[in-house]
Image (tube, rainbow, N blue to C red; front, side, top):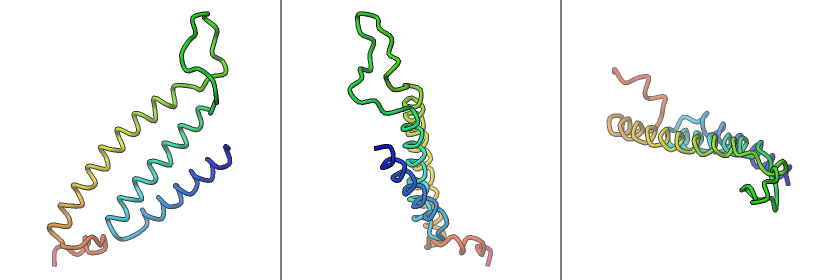
Length: 114
């Protein structure tokens, strides 16, 4: 199962990097979203996947050595919120650039003075 997750993260990384290297701002935004989700999945899967293990401490007070690590899960939740804010900023920035330039081509941004 870990191999499937590793391939999925790799494909998301590749698609995100491909989108970031395009000249269209919309594709760059989608690439950034895919790249951030790939990083989130990578951090989440690094915490370990445990099936059938409780996520709470039982009344008997047994230690939970076999359960998943909660720190990567907390980091992923924080990264999701930060990624949402970054995505909202990029969309507003794209709207402003598109309103002034009438194009989403980043090559045209270098020639705005003429």
